[in-house]
Every structure is written in structure tokens, then in C-alpha cells.
Amino acid sequence: MRKYVVDAKPFAFDFDLEKTALLIVDMQRDFCARGGFGEALGNDVTPTMSIIPTVKKIVEAARAKGMFVIHTREGHRPDMSDCPPSKLRRSKAIGEDGPMGRILIRGEVGHDIVEELKPLVGEPVIDKPGKGSFYKTDLELILQNKGIESLIVCGVTTHVCVHTTIREANDRGYECLMMEDGTAAFDPADQEAAIRMINQQGGIFGWTTTSDHLFKVLK
Ligand code: TIU
Image 1 (cartoon, rainbow, N blue to C red):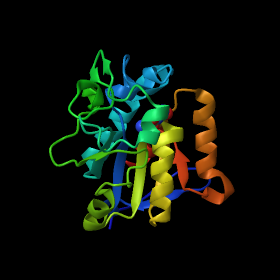
Image 2: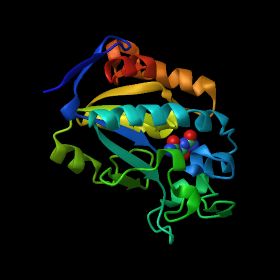
Image 3: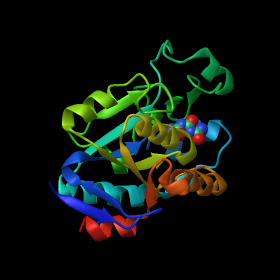
């Protein structure tokens, strides 16, 4: 048992390091670089690119403490047989050719995680077809096998894949701490709203904090 307590909203978040995983959601070029899915949807990717150094510091602090680290990637098979027609109707760019290869397709440069946050050997990478990290993946099995009870969550975008993942995790009994400066939405208004939606009502979906508070305890 290695207990830590982080200053957080709406109140302090305590976790056992041995039962906690750092979950890094979709830090892919398709969301955090120019010419990817994010831009194809009409967004400015400056906010998602700008958190890369902070997420890097968070993952390095977690690794230094021996915390379990998991990465996710949103995307589809090259034949797109796992892409619901309903998703494609509203996100027509999926599968189209872009400057980083076919958009949101596994194996393409744009689909992969940004160089700065490259997973290390032994860190699972969960390929997911949807916004949530639990839907049609083996994430829950991996967490159960590792005895994980709490998740520290970083990644993009806060209001879409990070939120969906935290909501899925809540219903499965996991306690989630979302990193305010280790997550980003394309629009700062969505970022602000997404943070509030997690920690409101006594922590309806969990806790939020900033990296300075986390580094105070993971030093
Ligand atoms: N569109 C948007 O904000 N996000 C996504 O489509 N996927 C993720 O958040 N990863």
C-alpha cells in the first residue's frame, strides 16, 4: 500500500499508487497535430497541441513512481468495418487521405500517438472504435487483472473522449481524477464546462486537479 493525497476539486483525492493507473486518452497526431481528424472536423488544434509538454511531465512523474500507464487511440480498421455508418455520416473525413495518411485509420502516421508521448514497452495501448475507452475494448479486463481501482486521466478531447471514458469508468466503480492542464478541448469554453461537469455536485464523476498539485505528491 502506497497512499497519496492530492489537493483536488471538490475535495482531496486519495489513491493507492499500486491500485492506480495513469490513463492517457487519444494523444494522437489526428487530434494533436495539423492535418488530422481534429482539423478535418473544423477545429483549431492549438489547445490540444499545447498540452503535450504537460502530459509528458505527468507521464514521466508517474513512470518514475512505478505507476501503471495505459494509452488509448481512437481509430478504425483499414476496411472501416468497425466504423458505425452513423459515425461516418457525421464525421465524413474518417478514412479520407490526409497529409498524415488516412484519417483515423490504424497503422497510419496520423493515427499514432505523438512522438513526445510514445508508449514504453509494457504500457498497454488500447485501440478503440468509439469515444469511450471501455466500449468494445479489453481495458476493463486489463484494469481488473492489475487490481486497479483509481484512474488519473489525461488526454484529448476533454468533452468528448476523456468525458465519455470517465463516465464509463464511473459506472464500473473506478475513481477518476481528471488533470485540468493535462487535458484539452478545441474550444476553451468546452474545456471549462467539461471540468465543471466532473467536479460539480460533490464530485458527480470524480475529481479534477492541476499538475502542480500532482507533482507535489509524486515528487
Ligand atoms: N471531436 C472531438 O472533440 N473528439 C473526438 O472525436 N475524439 C476524441 O475526443 N478523442
